Length: 357
Image 1 (cartoon, rainbow, N blue to C red):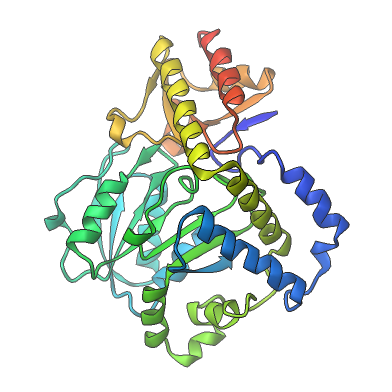
Image 2: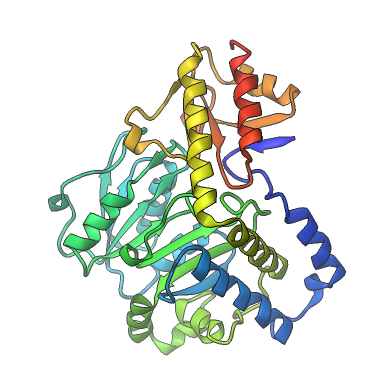
């Protein structure tokens, strides 16, 4: 089965080989205080720095999921007022977590299928952080990097926290414009679920550590406890060791391929998907403006409903995602990650083009 679901999605081609090697090396049984684990941890830190061109500006932390990372960054004592750009289910979840943390919040919303290019005057000047989703997986909307960069340029003291769950690493990421970013591994990295990664700019991290009370070390996955152990390439408690090991291996494989090549192929595959949609009488892109169309998750409206196309593709060994939430039976979502080859996308597009649903 080929999985074009937006998460969990298709495994990266080398994952099975690396799992077998991990089992042969008993990676699942090693101590997270051992030198062997420290090497695994360091390989991911160094690999992410190279793959994403972080220029040694970021510290890397490991947790259970991207949703956990949303919660952790909103528990930072420096954060009193958060602004949320909401245009789908996952950016809304970020906002809801802020409310659960009893923060002062401002919500700036767009209708589903629309993106942000608002004037800066709409963002309150007293806000501490701006929370936004680079790539809204529920609707297939991307926030242009140029918009994020312009916000940082105009408000350099405003900390930008970016959800890059379904954009990284296939969509460019500007480390200089973002203070904190997080993702999980079951989308763009093509790995089994169960690992979240937080990237925090070192300048922001030092401010956070200064503001935190020493007692925060005792909370589960506080930034200060993460840093205390992370500086030694460890974690506060036993982590998902095999997940971290596999992430390091896939990062190494992606570096070998070349991130520029991966991103160029992503755009080529996205263009194949768009051409398929344009040629099909029953399909249309849910996101109207091209500048807001995500290259990594295409949300497609289906005349007559999504069930028939999903079921038909299943019989041909391919699984696409239903629409999200209220759009479940009216849309399909097609993931376009590094694990999907050009041939995979061509096969999918041919199968859809040959049928009317």
